[in-house]
Length: 272
Image 1 (tube, rainbow, N blue to C red):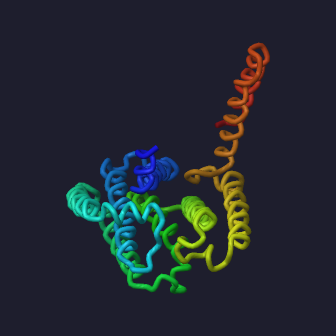
Image 2 (image 1 turned 180 degrees about the horizontal axis):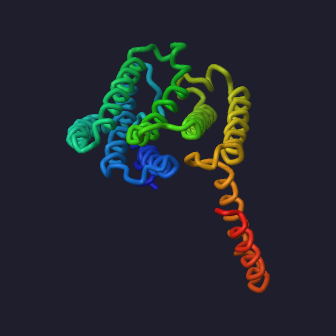
Image 3 (image 1 turned 90 degrees about the vertical axis):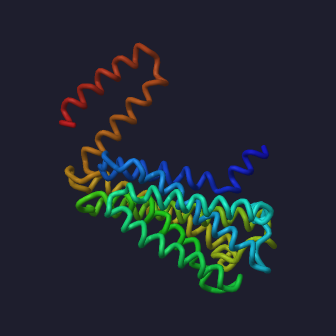
């Protein structure tokens, strides 16, 4: 289990999530020719920001003493050297990116750096820390989607809606993680929305976010124009037919053939 904990303490699940989400944004935004260095630079930058944030946290006298922070405190020198090396590598790879991407990344990187150092300078119970989860969700989403949108001539309303849905899901993940951290270590958790509002209020917020995200998804599927990237009635039709056909795996073979034949007839009439 130790390698798994190390993988988690190094924030590598977050890095993988950023890369896979970036590929998802690429497909949904119809940018198939995304530059090869985009996801790699994104992975490096996400890891650098998260690790730097942890290394600054452990330098605070009143910082949280979670296992993740203790891990960074123990290996602070090595991690600092690796961060410096990753910064050099990311800087070199940035020269291969399209101009629009590295300009966007430079602006977003400056905002992230300002945020990280501002959090470091604030007291551990400052009211501004209540914005940590929503701000991190917005910055993370901006990196994932913005690096793709920077390679598009225009951004549709559907894409904006999808990006905001992603930001809502990212916020849910961060808030849920804070709830679990508060439940497991009430005395060691950092000042956040959970410690200020309580688990009950955060639970209601999580439920409302789920409802809004699902409602938005249905709206995109059913009300967007057919020509819209990632939405429209044809998108909904494909999803429905794909779901029906995927259920045929649980149907006996003789009935499965009849369902597939019927499904083929439906597809031919829907003009997909």
